[in-house]
Length: 150
Image (tube, rainbow, N blue to C red):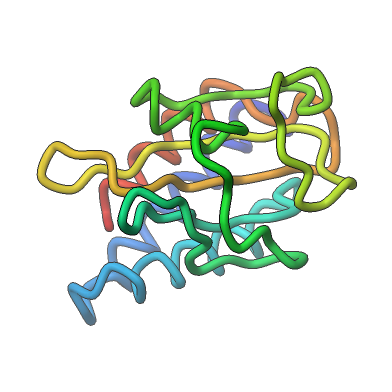
């Protein structure tokens, strides 16, 4: 997607979410709304959802797309890399990522954005694409901004 088009689309999504996320402070409801809107507005998002840290386990939360792994083994995959490094991780080719977990073999690239609450990582937004090299710094910037709305 062309840079200007992508920036404009993210801006519209962000503004829409700011309006939608005023109905409740319940994090799960906010995550469900974010996952649904992103998944249906960004045509290269193949799987869009959240993984949440619960008692030191990484469990699937609200998502859109094909069936998800319910639990991700500790310290494996892109989601745990995002949590452990406390930063957004962009993977152009998941098949080259050490320890990648293939919940759906059609996934080819991925971005993971940590979610913070009280200055502590509590989970991640995970987005997969069935195309290679789908994500860039524009996605990182806007998805980080969107995660702060939770």
